[in-house]
Image (cartoon, rainbow, N blue to C red; front, side, top):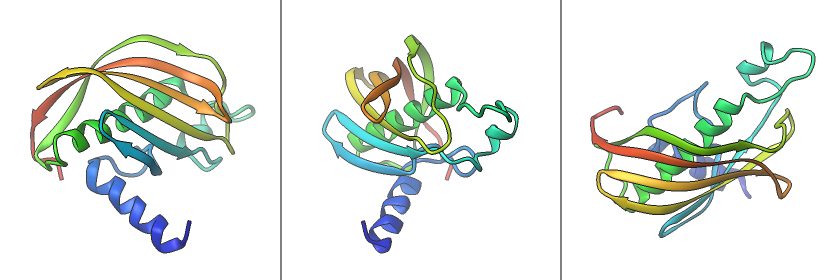
Length: 151
């Protein structure tokens, strides 16, 4: 992907999510279609959480993997409602969360989220995170759509 395309993709992510460094955990949208999104997080050694988790054996915290999945889910939901900047998606529940593989510096976390059902303002989604086609984490996410100006 050319530099201009990468920059445009980052602007697309920044335009959809209110999160910013160091808490923006989606680097790229790989595919965005009706009811489904695929995203990417490049896990680098200079992530702030690696300084304390764990310095000798750095591992991405599971709660941050789930947060990356939730951010991916928000991208999908925002796309479904037409990218309304007044919409904010608040995580309301996590079910069936499982961690299957450590995520370490140098990994590329590929996330896929699909809508199970939604009846606005309530959303339910299935999410998986993989590294090299190996399942790292999975969860069912619940969220509530609220109207707030955060940008």
